[in-house]
Image (cartoon, rainbow, N blue to C red; front, side, top):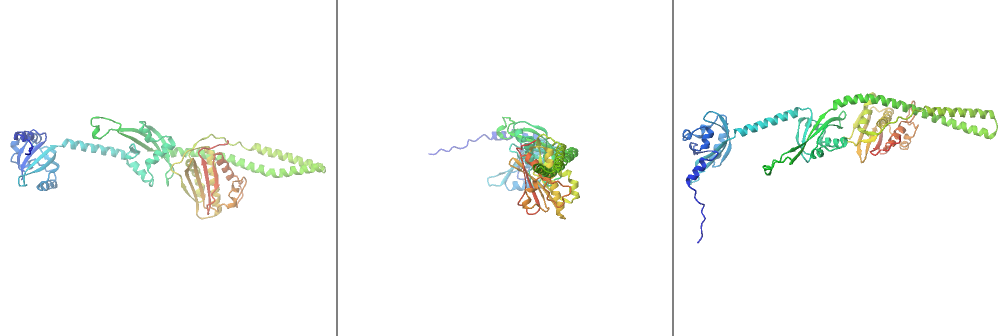
Length: 508
């Protein structure tokens, strides 16, 4: 004999008291929404006594604010024997509107037809006001952030952007596919020696660190003053409800203020100073070049005089002529000594960390007038990020000017109507490569080594040239542990390839 375990029956009064004392407003209506029952919570929420609403239609609570389409959707759902949940604007007995979060479920009779409707609703006006307030606060913050003339970024622990402002988006569009946040992090690592995200994850910030970015197609580097703040956000998971922790979400708030205009003013003044210093240095080097050339030219005749003097002394004849030659030789020796003593001492410059893009840009800016006057179209392609090298800034500027002067002379002799000059940089392993390319007549294969010899002049017009430019350029490259060569694969024009080593060795 089997035993049936039926669900125990609870007293009907218990069901009634459960509904009566429920903390949510409950009403029961017939199929036409006429109220048959309301509980105490309903009376407290609406202000109506149950005696006032029983027999009334549920529409007594309606406010004209709720759109008609909401009621249409409500009736369509419950008439199809489905529960409907939504929000209505209801009105209390005193005439005050409130926001009701409402659930209406049809109650079916034994034949499966709708006999009653059970409605439960609660006042969510405060939650709505809080939500709207939070949205307004968010909009205010976004408005302030978007109006701020500074880049604002919030990064998560993996470096992903989780908040950005309009200034960031505006500059991002100028980068043609490059990620600005990656460039900022790389520039801080290269130029300031730290990764901002790693510093923030360690709980440390930084302030007013200046970096530069070379953006392809731009008018020069963009300078930014960067600050970072470590931010710890609370854990929002359910497990953290009773355990409060600020270690769950580590963030970096990164601010980057564009100070390009201010830096360009500083750089403009600095450039004028550099122009004066470079002119002075090149005058001294020109004097050394001229005196060295004169000394070299005197040396040949002097050697002949020495040989003739020795020959006459060996023969024992025409002693007077031999004495005269000896006096000429002595005078020439003295003149040569005087020339050597007149050579100015090389300018001594201390080592410092240099940015090759910056030095090349200085030389281009100083030569702008010459380039424009010669009708030269310059294609400047700097690498976005370059390692800083140890070197002599003024010597390197002179090196680039010698190479630029050589390219300008080539373009002048080519007599092309279209004169193109391309300068490019890129980072190599432990070094920086500089390319200076022109569409001039080029250099013959048998001359590619000779052009670096002192006093070699390969131009049709020799006037005013001592042939020392590329020789001096090679000396400076050698002093910086570098290599300079004429690219043999270039078919048209001349392509000079210069490599400067990160671990430079200087012979001062």
